[in-house]
Image (cartoon, rainbow, N blue to C red; front, side):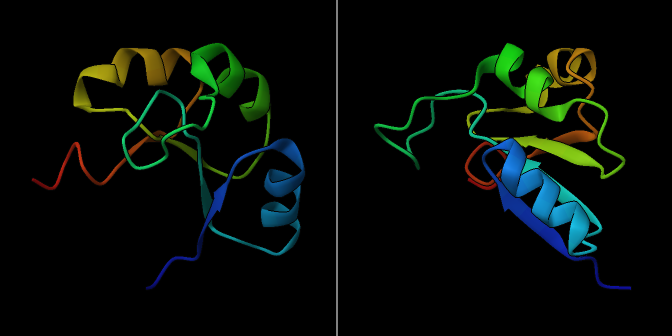
Length: 88
């Protein structure tokens, strides 16, 4: 079964993703990443604040790697998502 996943950057986009019936969202960038130069990352505190109590599963993306699993869990992330950290 294909999933519909939204890429979001703020609370308005999270609300829209949930209202549109997306199955999940990726929220970021959490940390600095070469794929988004010049963008101020959310940081784990920012991710946690935006994650809130949304029913929608929200994955952390942007500058994260498997080594950030503990931080992601503490931030109430569903999990980690990424490209460059996982696909070399």
